Length: 237
Length: 237
Image (cartoon, rainbow over all chains, first blue to last red):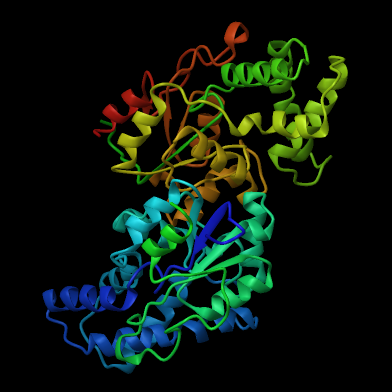
């Protein structure tokens, strides 16, 4: 067990708790097939995720005012549907497809591991998703969060310090009483720079055949686990 | 069942979900007795609650900058300890006593009723308490909220419209997809003025012998129930 125990643990969500890639590919393929719309949905999902960081950077650099992730996702989707030459999708279809990010399935260890952690710690997502996205996802997937820390509470996306420090402020805790847990070394580095405790577990299949990094911890994070169940064991619950 | 069903239901907390008066009297009496400090804790608790609305009004009128409820409670407590001539409390004691508002017990119907409602609706507190207060209370009392809407998320106290409309905004819902539930007619009137659905249930013992109002619904609220269990039944869960 690590020498310092957190009071609260916040989790990166996309990739760390839920398997966005497999979930979206299956969801979109089934939906479009039912409507007779054909496209390379796997390629579209990969391109959609590739647009994620550049779209948030436009907000971070001030090219866009604060824009919640649902709206960034929708703008990227509109561009991709045009780029991929997909025909036959109504506005209602596009709304439904965009809300696919609210219908993501958790990795198998996530809900049982979080349920164990909830018995001892405050748990929540700290995600670039907006509150409604994360809350709908929790209801859909049965994720037992205590509180939802969406980026719209802070008007900032990770890795901006306002997100990590905002959690500590809202919980009236010191930063070192909060642990950031993620499958992404970069997220943890930003959290550690703000004084948070850190926990890493790998998700080597997050990007399918396109995974390039985050196969292992690249710093001495306070906890290094194989998944969220193992993280719970290492925290003594 | 009412003709319009909400997607989310938010609850007033102090008095509506938890019995602040009996909880605090018991908590403070036990704590002080253990330390050999004597006072009329029942009178202090009643005076503390009486200071609640005036203290928030100072923020609402701009006499104070935004101040979270924990800090308003503490300022009122300092004054009352002096007014009551209570001696022998350390700073640590005062911190502990102030956090008594985080250790309130739910009315008997609250947790089972909310557990039923959670199966069909998004549920959360919409309270003048801050996020940390409401979250610690939920962990202490086992209240199964999906999301915590503390007043510090909005920088406003109820009945300011920013609170009711802030919930709809964060959930990406229309106001009439959100229901406010409370034992206080005034809270519901303010919520209805913002377009929310409303549910009333009485808590005739909230103020003990000092109860003066809210024995019954004073408008045709969308739901009028005897308690939260009955409210769940009236919503078909």
